[in-house]
Length: 508
Image 1: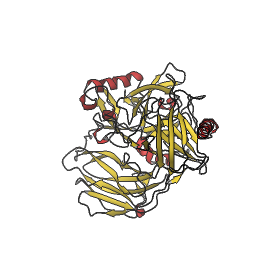
Image 2: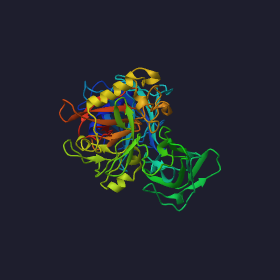
Image 3: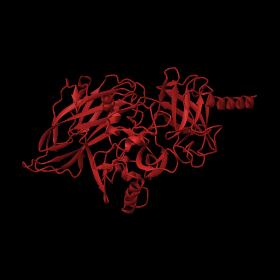
């Protein structure tokens, strides 16, 4: 009788994959070379998923299997959810790639809300805990899955090129990214530096061009090494709690650059992942100079269209932007797109108000996601979207000049990736493993995710995608480059023109 029940449940599991209404698997039919994922417990803020909710297995932005919950998914109550995750078929991006990390997403059908940032605990059939298990066809794995509040900071400094004794403003935006309301006090710390100072203004409501709410924060000046900022205000699910500083910098008789870093010190009830706990911005500074001379702009340039200053870096004979392009004359929601007309997106922004999109933490951190037609004309004057061959020139220079992990090889991802914002990885030599050692190239590449062909955003924290100007031989496809938090090399692949990708421009 038990065997009959199990067979019936497996049949229902397959039925619900095709009867589901939110997540759509990339494959068609029953799929290929499955991996069996048994979800024994699935919760949002401690509350089990209910009947009608959905759990989907993803490889990056690719949905490779879906299951619909039939009764509360709470461990110890006898129920489970089986997801038959399907492997990619040949060169098609319609399933998982063996060896890639497993990730899940939830759909709350009553709240009509999708949750990323799902934390997984892998176990075997005896419930013994395992380290992270990658996709592998034919295998069976058991999982406990949960989504809790997760807060992350983003820092904006304006201006970030300073001459002599000069004022500047700092905006810190603490954002809850898992769509779960956190509880308890949030603390942000900034290391002290004798070159700059500020006076705390609890009435301040604007900094670096952004709205802030200093009244919701308190400044603790008691630590000799850190500036400490605390707030007990409630951050709404997916919401932002910002504060700002008006500061003064004194370069003395020197010139150079330094970094201001904001970091989550604590977030009781609101910090489920540690890999996104810090954000940094660099200031280039100069000693006082005589009239008629110009500051050294070797490391930066200004986009005359909107006044934004970008860092740049010379790699071999090429000069690359060291930040993602953020030019945004118009913005669309992810539900709109095309492979022939230009579209621009900001991760997790679902409107058309350019000012509101620019005020988001994701815009400040990751810039803009462009489809291919938009990217082809998005770079500033004197710069252009790199072709596939130019990307290859960059990677070959890094490989041949000791930028591989531990000084050799093609495992250059860590040297290209920024030292912040990457999700954790247990695999040595990858961007998510000890990210403080990243970015020896100075390219500061960030995991900004993409706008997918299924009209949603995916991959932030896990991976970044950068467009090339070169079309693939596959219709409506272009070549791009990708960094993944668990992969040590720079990937080259082709994909749909209508998706939204990050852009790095290269100098003409």
